[in-house]
Length: 97
Image (cartoon, rainbow, N blue to C red; front, side, top):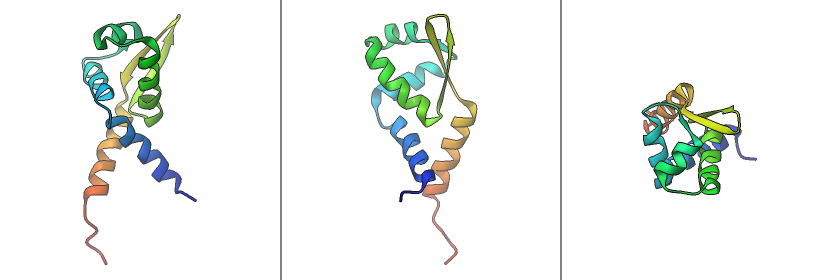
């Protein structure tokens, strides 16, 4: 059985391995954005945005909140810290053997 931490970690890297998701993250660096703004700025449809945002939110990198009929997205501080630590941890050689 796959270790659940591996599953969580794979979701983090999946979030980063698509150019549209990287562009969305770049837009979110300026602060919270409504889905309506992201579809316009990315020039993509609502269903395409929903697909990418689901992956970003499941990874923990992005937070979402509902306001009326719109969803607002922002970069998660905790998710960002986790991703940074994860990358450092898995790329640091084990020196103890």
